[in-house]
Image (cartoon, rainbow, N blue to C red; front, side, top):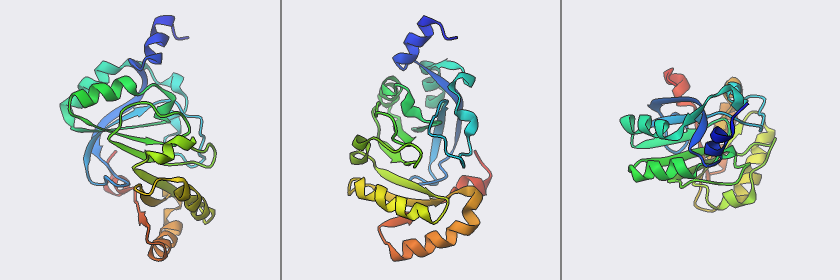
Length: 210
């Protein structure tokens, strides 16, 4: 049971349910190959059956951590931070992003878009999920649209999501890891016929890094 003081700090974004934080190489999407500090926030109710971080879903399993402590750790390592989850927009992102940007750190987020956008972002990667679709407002501000391809039906979903997204967003199709041998060749063929799309791969898994 969270006490009232802690809950108040969480509501203000001055504490967050931290699952893990680590310095690594961005493995997928537009910034592939870039060094970045990753902050993984606990809590998600989107419920993708193929999620590879299901241990992030229950926020109660991840201790409420002072956001200033997370920021101090980030400053030691990198000028770019990626906040992911779980679903980070279940929490107030205003405080952490404002403080990071004050320290000249670029703020990136990966989100399903299923919750209202909070925070100040240099890069928004929108990765919609069928289980719980994005709210309409985020399509207009997404810098990147990344669709996970698990089966052939996901190409139709990708086109539906791209039609809602602003014209400047970079569009990616990414094979779901457990099915990547089957789906990668289909994605290659699709991108060669549909030039607005690019391929994203989970290169960090090939490199065996976090």
